[in-house]
Length: 313
Image (cartoon, rainbow, N blue to C red; front, side, top):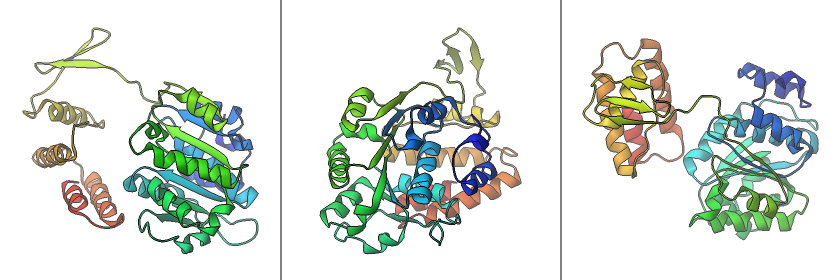
């Protein structure tokens, strides 16, 4: 299914095409066939980069432009909230039917206020805790919300889960016809969440890039299919050695560690290693990284962590 074939606002199509979208991924097609653009609730569990956010964007814009409603996008983390804010800002110039243009707002702090200025925005991004605060303070504009998007909904089973669960329940009680879209890369109880939300469920392992699993032993990766890959010895830490070899091949690497402190330590070592590898970063890429560094510092309040991360980039 191509973007040009979708029953969405022409200005939305123009923005998507400018962003490089041509056709939908299979999980996105499945979600649309199940009626998400027609107002049906949806639980979508699919791998990272499989297109969940685009479905959220399409539904949000449909509510704002065709129903005149507000959209509430809930995330568990401030950093993720800022990321989604940047995503939706791409649509802020689109004209609404009743005049004016789409406005995107974000609020992730000040739990002691109803934040009345958010009433002036069409798409509002908040953390789960901020949404809980807004409900407790009875923010009047919440009655105008026609779509709620809950990101990382698998956290309902986490210690922070009750905050999200109660927020969704209260929003549904406030407005029974509200549409709910729940997104996650992994939900073990997809069917249970879908039943609770009276929603369609899209569950898939499809991903745009093949995922190969392997085991590293003495600078050689053995993959499941029996194939081998030898690595250059670029760093004493195995995880960084794999990552640096991957970057040298022109690809990206993502390392998962056990703590924030460890992530900062490895980020520092990775930055130092890349700096010492002559020619690995082209001048154009260096300029892009400098821009990313500036963006990190512009997100919300500056912290020691954000300052260090920006310096590593």
